Every structure is written in structure tokens, then in C-alpha cells.
Length: 195
Image (cartoon, rainbow, N blue to C red):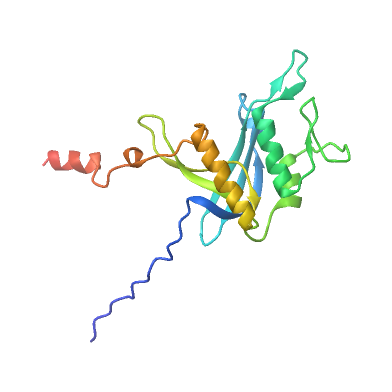
């Protein structure tokens, strides 16, 4: 009988960090789950040439005056940049209720977005990176919460914005010192010491 050896397929060389092509699979409104978050919307993204999805989130508190009316906030800016990118004209009233462009109240923003703004292909690009962890914590992949058109101009703008955000410390990427070492297995070390 002949020896069987499977073919070794070459890696596609696909890198899922940096500027990546993405599509929108769905939206989830998690705002009611956390007292500290006035706005918490998860956006599930398909990633070109990947069997796994990724996620980006619009999270934060809104700035309000003494009457409780919204006066602004960086989370509001991030939400509107996302809405502009996907072509959504809905928004928040000063009382914190979602409305469409015709003034009709939106009871469930996630359902509204899912019905109108999911995509069948990777129509956008986004910036994906390994986020620098707090001391003693794990490194996670994060997608900066902004989408750009999937064009050369969109990719160039995404890269330029990511560079600008890194220079100002908004995006803090993990480096080699944050990554776990290949032979850093405490459990295996303890087992060998117990022999």
C-alpha cells in the first residue's frame, strides 16, 4: 500500500489586520444592558476571505444638560459617522429617542438598521487591529467603529485616519511584548514540576 501524504496548501497570505474589506451582517442594540452606556450598538461584520465574522461597537455616554437633553458627545459623532457611511438618515432627538428622517419614532433601532442596512457583500472597509491590553490582560482584536466605501479612495482615507488616531493615542495597538510567548504555558510547567 502506498503512503498517503496530504498536499500542503500554500497560505493565501490574507491578513485580517489593518484596512480590511467588510460587509454588515447585523446590528444589536445592547444599550439597556448597561447603566453606564447611553448608546451601545454592536455591528457584526463579514470579513472578505474569512469564515469568521468580526464585530465593532459604538459605545459611550451622551453629554446632557441639567434638563436631561442631549447636548453632544463623542459617541454621538461616532454613531452619525457610521450612519452616514451606511446611508442611514435616522438619528436621536434631544430626548434620546431614535427617529427616522421623517420624524417617525423608531422603537427598536437594531431592527430598523437590520431591515435596511445589512449587506450581501463587502461594500465597506474598516481598520482592524490588536488592541493594547491593560497590564495582565489578554490581547483582543478590535475594529475601529468607522466604515468607509470599499474603493481605493476609501482605503486611503481609512489608512490616513488610522494613522492620525494612532498618533493621538486613540488607537493603541499591541506590540510583541503584549503577545503571549509560545512556550509560556504555566499549566505545563506546573505539571512537570510536580513529577
